[in-house]
Image (tube, rainbow, N blue to C red; front, side, top):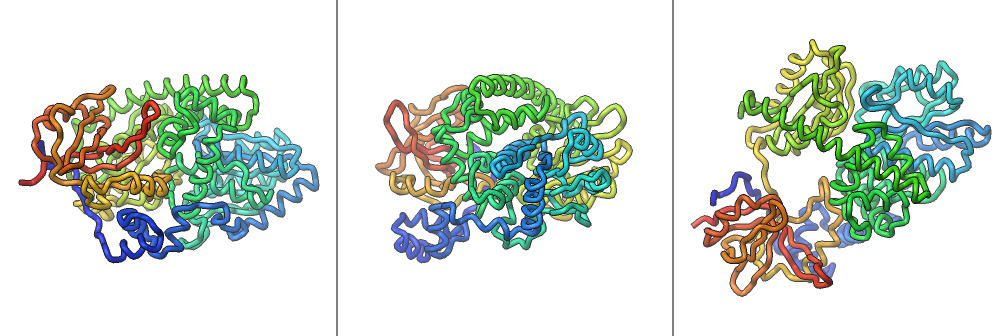
Amino acid sequence: MSHGARKWRFCEHDRVRASELAERLGIPRMAAHLLLLRGLETPESADRFLHPALEHLSDPFLLTDMREAIARIALARERGEHVLVFGDYDVDGITGTAILVNALRRYGIARCSYGMPHRLMEGYGLSPDRVQWAKEQGADLIVTVDNGVAAHDAVQAAHDLGIDTIVTDHHIIEGALPEAVAVVNPQREPPDHPAAELCGAGVAFKLAMALTGQTSDLDLAALGTVADIVPLRGENRVLVALGLREITKGRRTGLVALARQARFDLERARSENIAYQLAPRLNAGGRIGHAQAGVELLLTDSTEEANRIAQDLEAANEERRGIEATILKEATDILGREFRPEQRSIVLASPTWHAGVIGIVASRIQSRFYRPVVLIAMDEDGEGRGSARSIDAFDIGRAIEACGDLLVRYGGHRSAAGLTIRQERLAAFSEAFEAEAAKTIPEGELSPSLRIDAIASLSEIDPQLVATLELLQPFGHANPAPLFATCNVTPMPNSVREMGTGHMQCMFKEGPSLLRGIAFQMAERIPELAAASAVDIAYTPQFNTYRGETTLQLNIKDIRASLP
């Protein structure tokens, strides 16, 4: 067994401070150490982190232009105007649109409708053509969700047609703001603003809060926040933690139908299965067909309609998987021929790729090659739509902004972005993007690393510790599941075997302690593990309930040979 392809980076462990915090909170020292690593240095901040509550949500009126937005919607109610919510076609936009439509109807906007662009035929955001469509629908006021901050032409077109616009968005602001009645965007706030890291659905939720004084649709805010891969800390953490509690109650007809298609129990919903099972299905409509199906699913109270839409989304998701596999093979074949280890970024384009799926493929290539990735689907007119995905050390939204003079349109944030580019600018963009990556990413950051929170003995992994670790949920971006390492453990040879398809299980022994480990997608390592006498394991401890019995197990993330 090799000594591991991934670097293991060990965090500092201040035992004195951890012991003091543990005593104040009445929790295991190891759990207090994890809180300190997350910057929670006082009992008050740690307790707030461990027990998210509604009162931790900031006043929505702390967001710039919120009062102007509410005043204009109040005027729309007074005048009996038609309000059109215009969302983005991803999960963030879909959930945010549903949140705002519900809030406007609760507020008393009798004429309220919604729309969103077709990803393949229109591309991202509010366009002048869509404003013309809104005029034909009789709209007096457009409220955007998860788009609009870059839609200067569209907002001007709306103004010329006598339609007011309220922009709610969270994407990077390029230059001047559009001439809207209000622009509610956390990017306008200082970095220490409590709502600074909200996604589009989170911003829509704040507008709904300001409008109705209620915190309804927390489940949808949680779904959008998890799907958009924004940091799960501060206000985002509160939204997801409280929203997951709502999701597990199974009250939303559409989510129940979608979970049934995904074959998982909503009562056991976590951020992980939201991200990997619900979100892709909700996204599939926008990727393959039209995203409005997702909004319809979230708004309906009809079980029959919800089941029909969920089945359609499942079919779209299956189609998406097939297309994704083809693009992934083509992209990895190109990289097999052309990739150079010294390059800091990957930019690939093809006229045969599906613009609705390349974002997922970009994520897969990013995790395989550990470089920021831009994949571009070119059309027959020589215009390409690109999706970009980043690594931790690189702000891809800012890098693409720096290459903006080579692009038709662009927008995004630190981890992901989208762009439109002309064929003749591709080579220049690839060169400029590589230069940005070379400037920013140190050479040592080009291989994935495991951030080990703590070294522990297997005897320390007990039910009290694991129960406290549960309070660190929900896990996700900027709040990963805790990762422990135990060195020089013995894999019990007769216990190493394949589990399911491609997974591995093994019993690990250290002194008198014996714990079961499961390792997903690691079955190919069974022979070397069975032959090893001592290994180091990196893992997240967790409870496993099977046939009514709950036991401790280790979710193995990496295994390496112990140094002699």
